[in-house]
Amino acid sequence: MNDLLVTTLLVVSLFLLLGSGVWIGLTLTGVAWIGMQLFSARPAGDAMAVTIWGSASSWTLTALPLFIWMGEILFRTKLSEDMFKGLAPWMSRLPGRLLHTNVLGCTLFAAVSGSSAATCATVGKMSLPELLARGYPERVVIGSLAGAGTLGLLIPPSLIMIVYGVTADVSIARLFAAGVVPGLVVAGLMMGYLMVWALLHPDQVPAPDRRTTLREKLTASRHLIPVMLLIVAVLGSIYLGWATATEAAGVGVLGALVLSAAQGSLNWRTFRESLMGATRLYCMIALILAGAAFLTLSMGYIGLPRHLAQWIGSLGLTPFMLLLALAVFYIVLGCFLDGISMIVLTMGVVMPIVNAAGIDPIWFGIFLVLVVEMAQITPPVGFNLFVLQGMTGHQLPYVARAAMPMFLLLVAALGLLYVFPGLVTWLPGKVMG
Image (cartoon, rainbow, N blue to C red; front, top):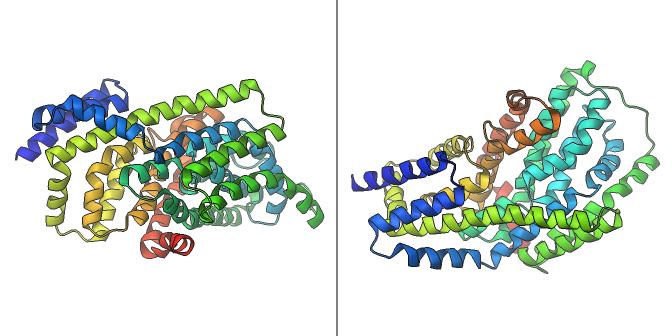
């Protein structure tokens, strides 16, 4: 009963602070302080100072601002335009034709971005006008872009994976390797859906402008060389063991600056804007992570995660039922919070339960990223929906309905990962032993 009272008080405090408009990071710190002050003998101020300093000075976390900065630099280049030029000639023979440029463009940009919203916005700013001008149905264009944009979270380097790795104490390099195959599976499911849709609605797919020769296709592919080189530099350095995730992030920033300069996009204004944009975003994330670290410590002193894990263990849930319950929980939570907040807010409680159930933390990390992807395209706080609402001028319900088939494909991908866990565990085992 005492645990129930403490939990109720802290949950009510959390929602009161969030509802009053207090920043998420400060809310987490405030709730943790209440818990330490009322239900623990350790001085709250001392615990808060030590914990926040410890979380902020983590070397592993250094990869996060660097990858964010890399994404901000690339957002200001002609990368999306070049990707469209390189991909479009190869799509003319596939059912659905240029609709696939949304999926493939997002897949490529995800491998150098790490952010879902940045992937969606960067690819969308080129593909939306092009596809709509050629007569492709707007609803399918928006839906495919919303769904494919979520690949920014799953295909490494991923900001969400870095946050999960830090908060759950899991190897970020292994998480990156684990996300590659599921990311390609999700992209394949989305392309498969677009092919089936195109075969069922042939009258809605515009005819190709003209037949392109193999030589023309190969010539157009030169536009893909810069992004492919950057992907190989960042991910190859990690998988070959030449660099840690943090060092690879530094390689990525340098590569993005070189690419931006080669395209003529780099000047003092874009450099300053990219640096300030990355600083603002990272400061927000760092404040959330610091608050979450203090909250995790507070919960540990109170003993809530241990008691909750024991209670759930006493229910006798199978791993499948536990994962199903967690998936529903995170999808509902994703209607109100962004992905990073969802993870840092819950890891202190969820990880002991997952470990007690014998679930591989690397596999669970990819499971969690997929569920967060679903949250990116569910109203009212689906970030990809906001991005597309701003780009298209449509209301949020219209964009959400357009993205619904992609949400169902992510549910199907989740089922595939459960049935075939090797999709997650095979590559990390091969690359890193």
